[in-house]
Image (cartoon, rainbow, N blue to C red; front, top):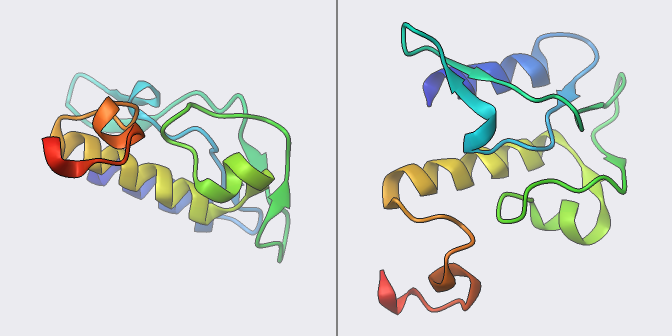
Length: 111
């Protein structure tokens, strides 16, 4: 997971034009033969441009991993990638998918 975080940090801060992946999820986190994590599938990624903190889009990402502002208003920012990464961490630690009934219904009593 550290490799994925490092990859996202590079996308966000490694050049003057930040890249927002927009679809960080376990299916887009790949491991090579040395168990090094890589981010894949840049199909809906967005370039923020210099000095832009966010842009708007109508592109949709994987349900359960979308940041609230992305799903409701189409706001794309690096904060959304950080949110999606956090959802991935939650899935790793709890072994529960963000679309499981316990999360959808909002009842943590089944944890």
